[in-house]
Length: 271
Image 1 (cartoon, helix red, strand yellow):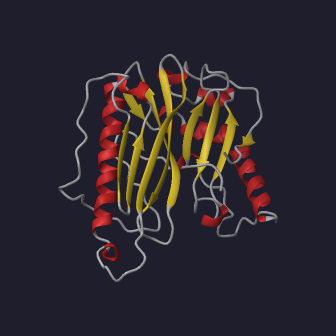
Image 2: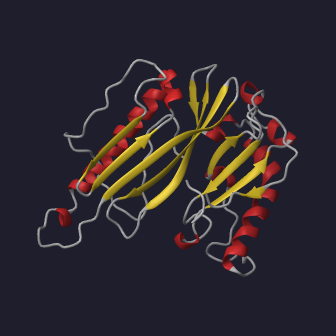
């Protein structure tokens, strides 16, 4: 299985789902994570485990120095734990002593700093969730943090001219995706096939990366299960070098954090 997963509204709360039905409201008994003063030494992991229930949510401790990021992660963790608790509570199989199979409800989220410049930080969060359905779901989320304006953004929100950006990446992006899909399927791509289209770039999870630890010069694109292929085919992770037309499409206030990379695009292999 390749890579890992899903971008949501970066300033809001994201719901993890897929082939499962979750309750809409969390029970009142869900623990509340108390806010802590801004500090890199503040707790950066929430873990709750009991019979048939496992919730883990972690984020880089260095981000606690930025109150907006710290509060975002804590709020997101409360929301996701509440959704898992609510779904767990409604599963009658767990209450019936005569029911032999007792599913374990699980959510695991792990945020990391993908890259950072002097003014911006790029973060990615791999996640897995199982809520009693046929199988669990996994993915990747991403956000960007602009230190200068103390703003959390979706990765594509730094792009001012989306048409120009897509135009600068579409051909290489689709070629790379089709090459990998044909390789996995063992046959040429068919455009009228159910999973034959080149899925829109800006609808995928975009993660800004840095080759040498400086400015953002590569774009990692995570394409989750069911997007470009069936669940069994797994996820796709493509890595595209930043080009001059791509930089020109970035909003002026963020453009100084990006640099042109003369490298080649590639598929990110399984980790």
